[in-house]
Length: 441
Image (cartoon, rainbow, N blue to C red; front, side, top):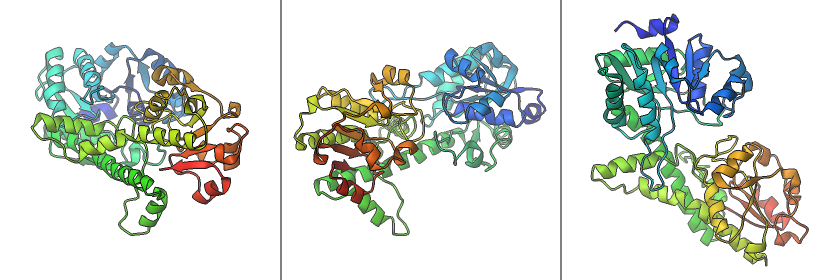
């Protein structure tokens, strides 16, 4: 196989990114900035039209970067015939029973297989359990294309590490794990990713190891947050403020800095299930990772139940109370609402016939309705709340003083106003001074 790196850098061949979400789109734009001919493919026609119009619905790189980008955005799969280096960045969610949903990565493999030409390389970035690339994806590529992996084309795996909404840790400055089906593939993949990754690439010995790295790093974070969430549940019964405990704990040199909270999204809230699924298939029942997931998945109902108790203690009937939730996304400063655990708060409140209004400047109102059947309202239009749940620490919310939060409540004594500060963005002494009936993790 001739050097694909030279062909890509010399613009003799194209690079394609399949899946243009929070991960794929920044990758496509980054390569295009380096003068690489890039094809950006996605099945979502409306998303492609937004990109063509210079609009970044993910807010990851911004509208200006999209307008200036030379990426050829398309939903025509035959355009992939022009590419020799394919990067797969489609989502890998879980089903309702927490088993892996591999349909997106299977579908992407079929599309590439139909348009795969000899001497190409396919690199998967989608998070999967160890073995998926070789046991699921490669057979599909071979069957659909009629080509043989290792002989006619090469395959690799390089787990994505993009953190949606994070403007500091970006593709360019995060070391990139790379792997290949053989040494030749690994060398090409490393060289091509080195074009855009300033922090450098970190080769590992095989594809399964690279797949395992991603699962391990996200499961580690999930477990640490689960530990803090479990502490918060016990401290709540002891009437101890968890944030105050964490502040004290973090004065020690080896404290890890984790805090309790809602753990959703398409990475930490999903990836551990890929590991536990594979472990079960091998006859091993997860003792720690699965229980961490159980704890974190329970936090939405825990927060909602705390709100209900506070409403009752304030002398109000939950069913007749107006609840407003500030934040719907799975994390701060990001428009992504997929697998947001705020949805679990909403679902639990609905058991009490409470349909909350949602304030979130980052969220598309139509997506909120289709995903969670909730109404996005403007903060200026809210003045009759009985309970306000600050669920996401958007910068816009963190800048608000308590006097602005007070405007959201209906006219009543301070101790009848229920404020649930999930992320601990307000100082405890200010909350006490306000006279609110407040609660926080």
